[in-house]
Amino acid sequence: QVQLVESGGGLVQAGGSLRLSCAASGRTFSSYAMGWFRQAPGKEREVVAGISWSASTYYADSVKGRFTISRDNAKNTVYLQMNSLKPEDTDVYYCAARKGSIVVPTTLYDYWGQGTQVTVSS
Image 1 (cartoon, rainbow, N blue to C red):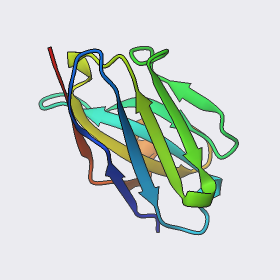
Image 2: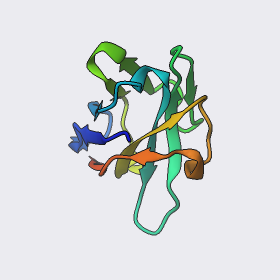
Image 3: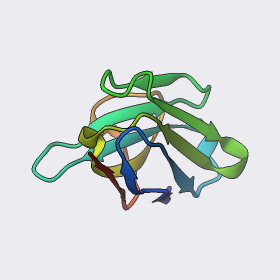
Image 4: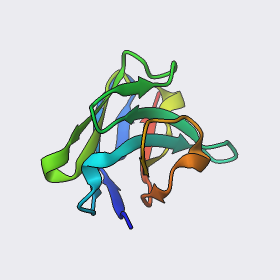
């Protein structure tokens, strides 16, 4: 069992930055792939970024070049640095984990955090 808790969301103006954190429990954290997903009202949850145990990364085209995912295995924490934020980035952001490699489908992730709200104003 893995427990995930997100933090760092908030209200920011377009062009601004936020850093999200996901604190994870579990002694096998380093063997898990971690992902950040987002979901706006009335829309499907979509992948934002992922990172493997070996620090390989994946980014959705919509955030590539603006967001950076990283992990600190010693702290059992994954981060999402979000720069050049746009109003369309407004969503609830979720941290997720799975044992194995990075994958895109949300259904293949086993553990989810409670979500943290990110709101970007024009």
